[in-house]
Length: 512
Ligand code: ADP
Image 1 (cartoon, rainbow, N blue to C red):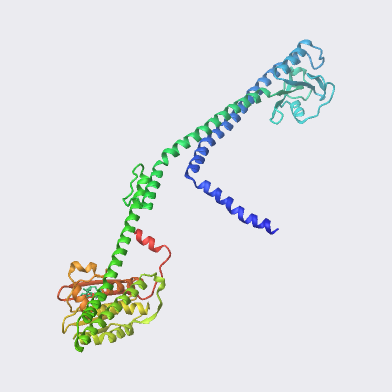
Image 2: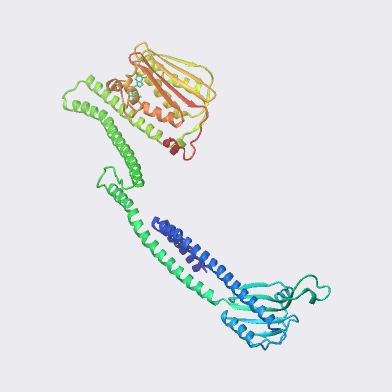
């Protein structure tokens, strides 16, 4: 029992998989479509033609038989055959009729007695059938038995009687039914013609099927040639033989695929370049403090009888370099954290006034050291759902920059405001400002406007990159305006309620 169920479990999915793979082939689909489109009309036409032929052939044959039988019925009356069936002429005519239509003729009188049967087996018997009775009332009937392949009809044998000879109360009719001719005629000739037609149509269908197969082979060969080329080109790129953009202009579709792939390739190349830049920037930034430390340590080692003050001075410099290295590593770690998904945010309801006040409090000693006045203006109480740690880091960077890149006796003004949807934090300073052409780069990693000043003030070039990532995670925006020599103004705008990204939103946005 166990073995059986195990066997079923493994074979069924495999079978389905093969079936689906087979149908997923474009060649197979084209073949099936052509086959359906080509063969269904043939099939329908064959059936329609055959049915139409059958209907017409039977109707022609029936009317032929009816004409012959009516003529014969008149002869029967003329020769008084119903009273005496010995007439050789009539018997010969009846024989001829049944031979001509490969059938049987019965002549029935008004007492429902069979007075003549061309097969000679039912004479003298009584026949009771609906058709015969209806016919005795003057109504001819006609029917086709498809299963056995014969036409059956009843024709009344009518005698024209003068009005004077009619019995009393018989009305005005001059025609009297004297008997019935029941004829069954074989339809074999029609069936034979239909069989032959059917065979011919089936031969045509088979030829069409073979033609479709050949056409599919040819079509798939020519149609799929460009796709084959594009797969080869993609394989070459993937195997690393070439990094050239691929181009297969044989047809519009392959051209589009090529263009789309080149765009992806371009983006991948750009990402790869920016990753390489980032790695080389990181190594460079990390190496700078180490080089300084090595120079300082080497000069201490190579000099003899170094005075204690020089030792202390050099060791202080080494400690400063270690601190710098530590800051770079910390900033890098923060940046990596910001690069993660927005779902890594730890959202809670935060009092933004208190948060900004705390930032100002922490930075006030640095501002005092640089003789920069720190002003905070809160236009209304604001509570928002944010990640407290990340937002603190983002705003601290802005305020710290405003202090670092300020002038002596300068000021930094932080303003908090909100509407019903967003809160804004504006950080204005009276500092050195940023040249207009540099503004678009300041959020890039390791980008510094004035390298020596940045180093001097302990910058790593990562602060604004961290700030931008943190704000973007909150679905907010950051804008900057600056006048060189006069000051800079950063404005951060963040939704009061955090809205998580919907699945597929990223893709839609990119498309837009
Ligand atoms: P850094 O660690 O060097 O300060 P940031 O990413 O924080 O790096 O800033 C990038 C560069 O932008 C800085 O090197 C500085 O030249 C410039 N910058 C940032 N904020 C200000 C500001 N408030 N005033 C003038 N220049 C600024």
